[in-house]
Length: 131
Image (cartoon, rainbow, N blue to C red; front, side, top):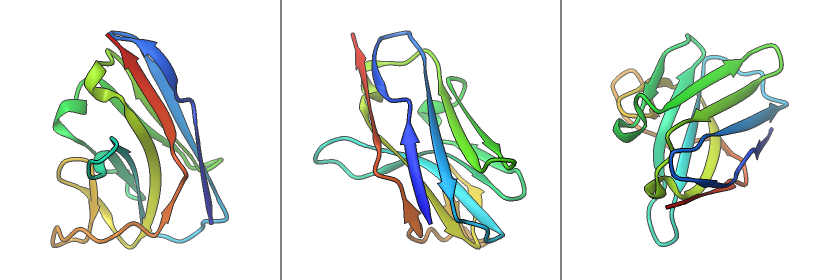
């Protein structure tokens, strides 16, 4: 299984970026796909998630600004980010996990809400928002 992110870069505050994650050699279902971000020295946090049933969840600060979409035809997950803020600066990762659903604030978890580690990760793409 391979995940490859693209679309990162530098943008002025208020601008937009569209991240893309191509997932290869993954056919398991049910699944949950998430976008995460991480700043140096900080823990990785969930940004948005989508599962095989089409449920979508967002982290609070992402709501209304970010949109996650999943194209099942080519197994690509996009994250459209609008009205970017300097605090959105981070490395963004996509990941997929078996047997989980999209719940809470941008996370993948089981039906009881317990979060487990994602199974597969991409290498990340850097997003820099300049104030």
